[in-house]
Image (tube, rainbow over all chains, first blue to last red):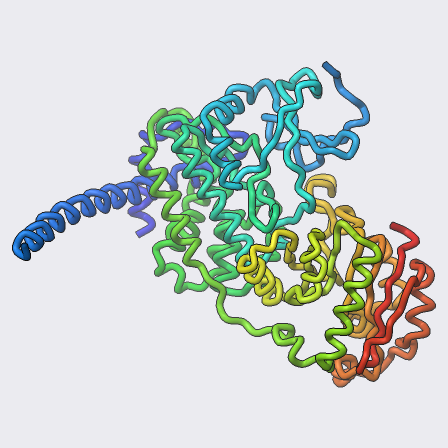
Length: 70
Length: 468
């Protein structure tokens, strides 16, 4: 698993920004958080859209239900 | 404009950040902002972030001192709201460290909304003010650059996540490791010390185990490191926010395992009757009213029962104890009561917090942060003298440095608590008696009052230090 992650890390190296900080962000930590961030960010967006889709359908469903009740 | 004043004392812990430094003038604490930090400081103030954080009591407030400019590098000097007692992460209990970490993450999330980011995440930048953790380093912010990763991610994991994970999953005493590693616990050490089962939990696997491996891998590979420095691409803001939220969620879920402590039920097992307990409280209140201290250090506070006699009078009270469970319980109580004047802290009085860091001066010993106006040593003397073989004279000498006035309880040998301590060892303490106690303490203190506790053989003293 970790090997796989490091291959992904190498790919991501091409998309990183220079770290200019007065504390050492640590090269490993710096690259690693980009990977983690990318994965978490991906799920974050999925969750966001999933929530939107869910709300959309719930609205239709609830709307109809209310309509029938009336 | 004043130029450099030789009387100023520059804080020994304030040398890492080129953005400015802290100094003392006439006993007041100021912070110089260097010209190099001008843009970031002005952005902090003009963006509305400063006011937002101050309103939420997340950042220490300050006022600009127009008439003082420290030296040629100086842009402005600010005077932050004073922090009455500086405490350190190795003196905090689990919930205090967790709350301090959560406050930093919350600040980072708000800062990103205002177009700024935290450039460091040192636990030493958080202090407890009026019962709440607050960021005291006004210079911790910088302009958020689109595509930038969080530079303080490593520091956050070392200062907060590693000690919290170790104390939650292994043993709370791991919190003391921060005293050894002043820039946070190395992640490889945390990874090795955590149980294997944490490798099956995504949160720990990611932020500790794989994070540690990534650090090791890249520390060996200079070519890769150079590539990273040379490349110019991005970490999206959503990714950054997702990372912060993931840390926030993971840390707020961390809990302390149930652990037992001999102190937890202390007041249920002492040989105090309710009458003598009430009498003891009355005497302590009387002493407080007589001396009217502004600060009290309760050196063996347990869960803060007696500390609250002082804090309820508006006196800033540090409630120290060697037992994490008691400190934790005390902290939970202050959260519930919204008590602003009590600060529970871990302290092993037989090995108190010492001077630490570069040139022994970055973090101050307990004694240097004093003297307190008044110290309490209630039901404590027998633990020092008998469990730790400390002669009275040594206890008196140290106590005389810690506080100007001392409220101390003498617990005689016939007391059941002392008998308990002696039950498993030879009684080599022939001079453990009230006469010797008074004689030896008189070398360092003037004994002002003493009261025999009703329905008990214990005696309460009010003494005035000859040293502090």
